[in-house]
Each structure stands twice: as C-alpha cells, then as structure tokens.
Image 1 (cartoon, rainbow, N blue to C red):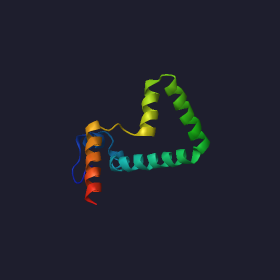
Image 2 (cartoon, rainbow, N blue to C red; image 1 turned 90 degrees about the vertical axis):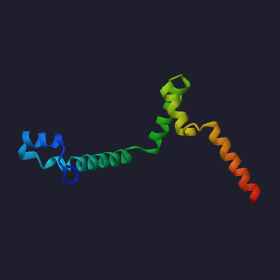
Image 3 (cartoon, rainbow, N blue to C red; image 1 turned 180 degrees about the vertical axis):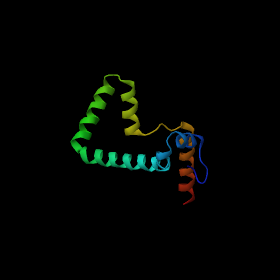
Image 4 (cartoon, rainbow, N blue to C red; image 1 turned 30 degrees about the vertical axis):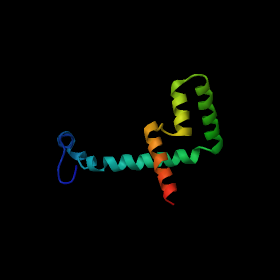
Length: 101
C-alpha cells in the first residue's frame, strides 16, 4: 500500500489471500531487514585476507584478458572515466582561482 492508495497488485493479493493481505505492506520492510542482516553477516565473514585474495584473483583474470574483470579492476582503482572537456574546464577554473589569490 502506498500512502492511502492500494495498488492493483495489492488488491489482487488481498482478493486471493485475504488472511495474508496485511503482509503486503510489511514486505518491503522485511526485505530491507533481511538485506541488512545478509550484509552484516557478509561483513562479519569476510576477512582482510579474503579481500586480498579476491583482488588478486580479479587482477589475475584482468591480466589474462577477461574484459569484465578489466573493467571492474580499473573502475575500482581509477574510478569512472571523466570527460576530457570536464577535466580541462576544471584545470582552467583552478588556474583562475590561483591567479586571483
């Protein structure tokens, strides 16, 4: 249910399962709670050594030519590519600011 409005899906669910209709509203909260619990469990389970091993494997795959691994490694290390025009404009702004000081 969104606000005071009931969606088409919720109405169909209520018609098919009148005894479980109240669960529709809590479904999102349940998923969020479960996702949070899973993240917490993963954070507790993964060690720094695991992260190092995963990184080394990704680098190994990237150097072997795996395009997805190459993208992932470069994005994690360098970040998203910037447009050359944007970089040039930022450099000009920095020069203007330095000249004004």
